[in-house]
Length: 104
Image (cartoon, rainbow, N blue to C red):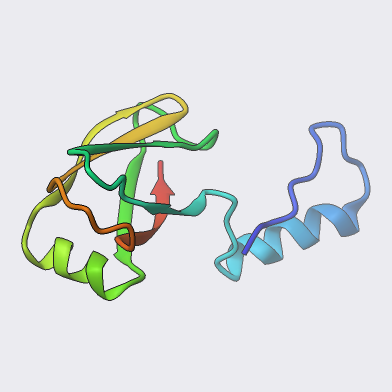
């Protein structure tokens, strides 16, 4: 669900209105997915829309991710410009996939 982003010098009112309508409909360029690294205790998620003040919101997209979340073994341990880090259980599972949205 990406949103159209008009340039800073955009003068076409229709393009500006389109961007506003998409934002009001919930579209965002600050979303993505991440699969937790197998055999590791952390996963770094690179995202150009992430900033030090962002709040990553996770939603499990697989049963293995839901189990990880339910066990309380995954959390956001760091947020910086361009990335955030998830700390999680060390597991051989390669199917722990989450969807995320960045706020702020």
